[in-house]
Image (cartoon, rainbow, N blue to C red; front, side, top):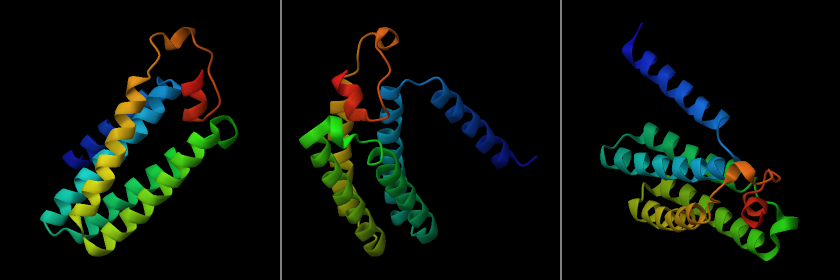
Length: 146
């Protein structure tokens, strides 16, 4: 068996195990961290002039933000905050598309700053005892209000 294939299989099992055991708050945190990691990978790939890999990393970050974070918003429960986050996620996706087209690390740094602020805010509201808290809808805003 190829070592790379074995390592990738091990990583996949590790991520799947974390997802299965995660509560809703942890899942959103994992999405934030995954997007940040993908953007960081894209920066390194720009520096190494690995165009295909850069495109894949940025596409992964776009998917995490657009299909993960954005899709998890509960506009009904979140009100203005959800609307603001929705607009911010859409902005970040547009900036990532532009960064991909231009191979622009400055734009990636901008999105990294925005995501880092959101990640720190999200991680700071982690309930002390998630086990005793009722599980909310799939929205990270609804969970934050619980």
